[in-house]
Length: 181
Image (cartoon, rainbow, N blue to C red):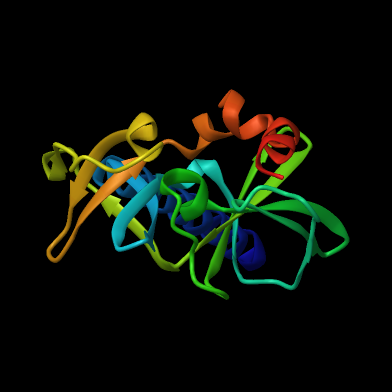
């Protein structure tokens, strides 16, 4: 009989623990407002929605594609999966990212694309009151601008990288390769 009392108490403790975990998760979700991946590119502080990024990676070895546009670097082998590698700075405003850098991997269905950026700073969370009017970004980046978010030190201009994967100019790399070759 003593064992039944202990099991009941353990079960009650487990239920209370689960309730506390759920309340904590709900509280965190309510506080976080907006979460994104902060990165630097060409002297700009940028942010993308966390849900748009499949993976963050240091630069990986890549295979160039002869005759490709300046921004279409080549192919990367990530754990057996071939990804197209795009220099995001070169595509957005014609300024290549430095050699090395970091990669933001985006996925749209079965297709994944790695974007080379200068430096991934990390994940940031913002409250709605931290929303700001974005600074005007140059080149194609203006088309993908959404809002800006301010933390203690930096204003992060948010861009919609998910829209990038739907942009005809981005998707027509083959046509661009012929024009630039």
